[in-house]
Image 1 (cartoon, helix red, strand yellow):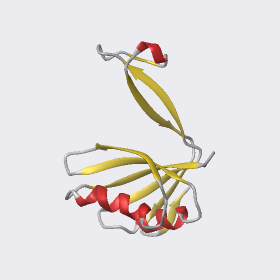
Image 2 (tube, rainbow, N blue to C red):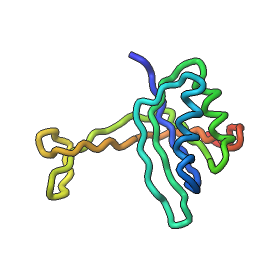
Image 3 (cartoon, rainbow, N blue to C red):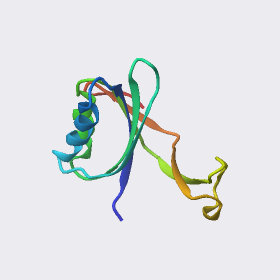
Image 4 (cartoon, one colour):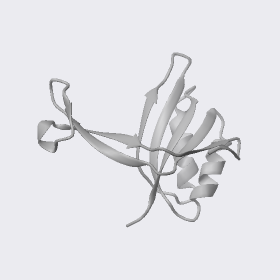
Length: 124
């Protein structure tokens, strides 16, 4: 089984190329993205993007390059990150039982974060 890293990217969505820059940063170094999700944090256009990427030999370089990308504030690697599945039904009730809902929600759970900003490790 291939190891994965869960990465959280904080950046400003100024144009549709924001998500394209994130994705192409990994693809040009042959780092596969298994899934991604994004949400708006505030009215100034700050977005939070979560990605699950394959841990290959170019992964560290791709993360450093991404932290130097235009409109990216910081990149956080959730070192011990794992996903917890929840299920929601039509009424909006959330459960951890697969039979209780028809919408699957993945929530990243972690306790250690390594932060990169402008190509440098700025926190751990």
